Amino acid sequence: MQQILKLLVPVTLLLTACATTKSNGEKGLKDYYKDYFDIGVALPTRNFSEAETSFFKKHFNSVTAENAMKIQPIQPVQNQYNFAPVDSLVAVTRRLNMKMRGHTLCWHNQVPDWFFKREDGSTIDKATLYDRLKTHIYTVAGRYKNDIYAWDVVNEVISDKKEEFYRPSKFYEIAGADYIDSAYTWAHEAAPDALLFYNDYNEIDSTKRSKIIQMIRGLQAKNIPVHGIGLQAHWALNEPSESQLEQTLKDFSALGLNIQITELDMSIYPKEHQSREWDAARDKNTLYTNDIANAQAEKYAMFFKLFRKYSKQISSVTFWNISDKHSWLDDFPVKNRKDYPLLFDKDLQPKKAYEAVIDF
Ligand code: GLA
Image 1 (tube, rainbow, N blue to C red):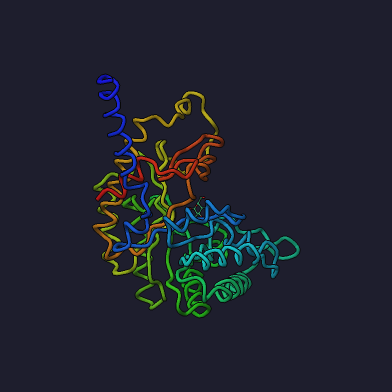
Image 2 (cartoon, rainbow, N blue to C red):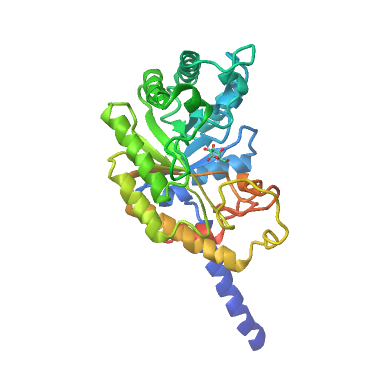
């Protein structure tokens, strides 16, 4: 009997420890961060189960449509808008009493071919592009002006190449950089109360960051309505380092604008920005081991420590996707390579990284 009792004690202790683990309580991620910033999630447009909606309600107070508001999905054919999926996401967001970010009015990806072409297939001129972009922005931002409190107006116009300033996108080729000013002006006219953001990735790279800052200062000098910087924050176990992230937040803070972390995730693989084929030698270790889970928790803790430190500037932190059940990183940069980038596992259970983020 004595022996059995002895054995039972550690088991009981263990159970008590689990029951009191912070993540199992009523409080969700957004509650731990209520004095710091909003916590958002990027959602697809499909039906959600009750378990999912109560999970969203517990942890998040902000929503971004993962794809539905981009040009291709929302205006696949000229003047034929696909509002229904967005409307239903707006309704879910309202029902759950959450805020909604808009993403995105002008981006070189997920934009249909017609946007840049005449009926005969030739490329349109600048005036026609202005007309199309203005109509798009007025229609989309105008329709949701009472639903969306912040827009990523322009996404990813800065080049990754050191010697190149603007990305040579179709928009840029046809219109030069002026369309960027106009996009903000039109968004402001269509949705006067919305906060307008510039959104980009790899802002932790000092060269790219300086270019972004230079562009924003240029907009500010011309009194273009730009209110914030969105850091996508598609990061990884190997980057950014603490000092790199701190420098990034410091540099952007100096602009005096709102900062939002708009698309946060942390790949367990070294960061790559271009898609590539599966490589047997390089891609053989795809298991989510305990060591990786611990390293990820540590890194996430560092991110959030710095986010809290800069919480005067940071008003929102949004995760890109819900849980490790599905992430865009499962297919990027390598097709069918499973990734584990988020705070919740495939069953929506909190991971070690979650515990680390709420432990402060
Ligand atoms: C960029 C875009 C997002 C999304 C991700 C990948 O960061 O801004 O909308 O497409 O790529 O999913």
